[in-house]
Amino acid sequence: MLDGPSAGAVPTIGSQGFAGIQPADAGNHHRHNVSAYAEAETDVTDRFLVSLAGRWEDYSDFGSTTNGKLALRYQLDGGVAVRASVSTGFHAPALAQQYFSSTSSRTLNNAVTGVPEYVLVRTAPVDTVDARALGARSLEPEQATNVTAGLTWGIGGLSASVDVYRIDIDDRIFLSSNFVDAAGSTAIRDYLAALGSPGVTSVRYFSNAADTRTTGVDASARYRWELADYGRLTATVAYNRNKTELTHVASTPAQLTALGVRTPLFDVTERTRVEKGQPRDNLTVALGWDVGRWGIHLGTHRYGEIEGVVATNQSAANVAAFAQGSTRFRTLPTEAGSAGNVDVIQKLEARWVTDLDIAFRATDTVTVVLGANNLFNTYPTRNIATTPQVSGADTFGVFPYSELSPFGWSGTYYYARLEARFQ
Image (cartoon, rainbow, N blue to C red):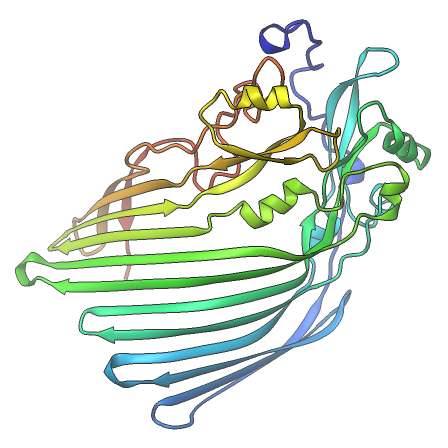
């Protein structure tokens, strides 16, 4: 029996929960495609440049598509240029998205016997019985439209640019929600068992689940000082701010609602991952000094705040226990759980991560580099901790940091590198 927060509970069977790769998960799949590409560019005047490109492709499994791009650039006085472009794109579902198959296991207490038993958790290809039975459809290609506009300029040692953009992607391919029976129900398990898949209690699959729109701005600047006997000093600043929104989400398949499954095709966990799972803003500041045979480069990157769902269907008592910690979170009324419960969305704070390297060019072909990644030993926000009432996002302390963190959780990394270049 377990102790600690799970005192008295029955432990998981075996040393780990992966039962092994099943023969049915293996596969051999292929496709072929042919394409033709053409591009033309001309100076309409000594200041005005026009570029036009087109691409035609034919896929053995998705038919043909034609896409194009128009780009314009106009040179102003003072080293300033205006640029803009519009283009379309096409992405056929990757073979891994069409055919990826994975089966793992976990332990559940049988509601009738009370005895722990292995059950199977599947990521199923869309053309399998398990996926089709729960509403999967053949994947369609993603199609995109991209519009950008911006300025560039270069004056003396300064070069800089700023661009705004909007990217619309239709029929974007995502993993679906994880479809599992509600507490006390075995509808999915019984249904799949009747179709020849006994023991499967959880299924997810790739789906053209949503359309998205990403808008943002990129800005960067670099200045270089020539210091004569003191070498060269280069400063770089780059900033990005963007926002991704779901403009359409596919409805839940009728096969699921008929089984009493309330989880939508694209649930709050997946929607939050798309809209909030990447930093809204990123800032990079770097300084490099090269003098003689020495080079010193210092850079720091600020990763903006992100969010991720860490617990669903939580009671007010559980949320009160979460609130005793220092990790910030917000709540939403639960999407597929009990009335009055909430889903918990954790906020990962913005962090600065700094890198440093010092290089010595021993000869014209050999360079020795000493460096440190994450120089100041920065760690992400800690996961919501396990309490006696509920297993938190840290899984009883095994995973103290979120998998959603845009940088690692291993702290400072020191290294030495020997580089050799051959003419």
